[in-house]
Image (cartoon, rainbow, N blue to C red; front, side):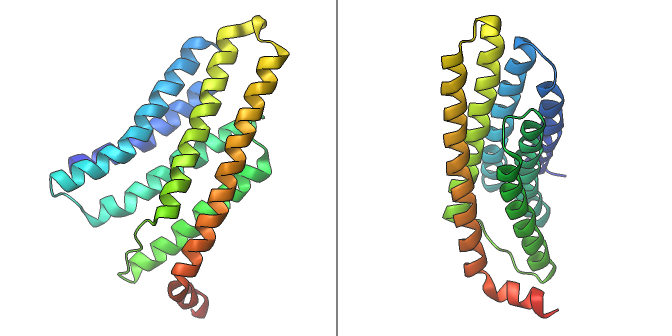
Length: 193
């Protein structure tokens, strides 16, 4: 297993650590969550850079990288639903899109077809990472303020989270529709089987 693949696997491991820490009260736990999430998000860029620079692009790495992204995003969204920070229906839209597209990609790989990430998908991923970061900052700030958190602060932060979530859901739907349209021949092959 090469270095870029190890970096990708670290993103999966970090996901479970972050999810565990989310349910621990206190500033330290939330600070570590935010720091580890930013590190995990950075590994998404870093593993690709390493693979290209070291000329170590492998089929396993190409397949594992988007799966690691999905595990990170889906895992944290489900934790946020449990914490009542994200409406379940919004998380469901994102989760269904991610799972269906990952399934289509896996099917395509089995047919020796590599479906590269498109610009819309990259924008969607960035919006997901920003939204998760905003939620983690919100949790951290709420723990820092403790009993001094005002209703105005709570309202403002919930509005910011809601705005980010709406942008993410809209980009998720647009990128999903774009993916299905662009890869309709693969989808027709799936349906025809």
